[in-house]
Image 1 (tube, rainbow, N blue to C red):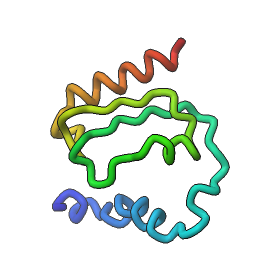
Image 2 (tube, one colour):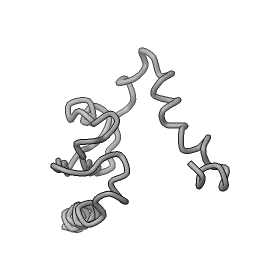
Image 3 (cartoon, rainbow, N blue to C red):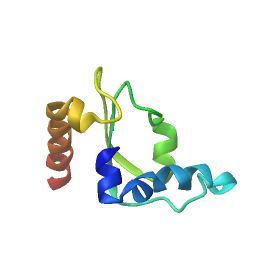
Image 4 (cartoon, one colour):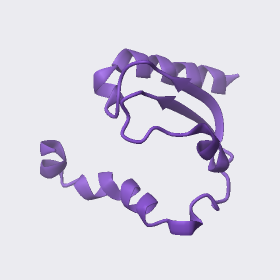
Length: 94
């Protein structure tokens, strides 16, 4: 929280939550993206993504589920996250 406070980035970091909360019935009616997307699911995430919903508006080409880690996976399990990002980009290069 201190970092958000000192850098004045709390508003922008919470914007995603605001948008989802106010999307109403238009959520899920978005034009699907064609950009290859990778998803890493950690068990202690606040609201873990559900694959069928993620695939509605994203071109999910890489999906990983881990048995440890949470919302701050980059701090909690950096090796798992970095390894998964590398795997995703290796696939994207092919």
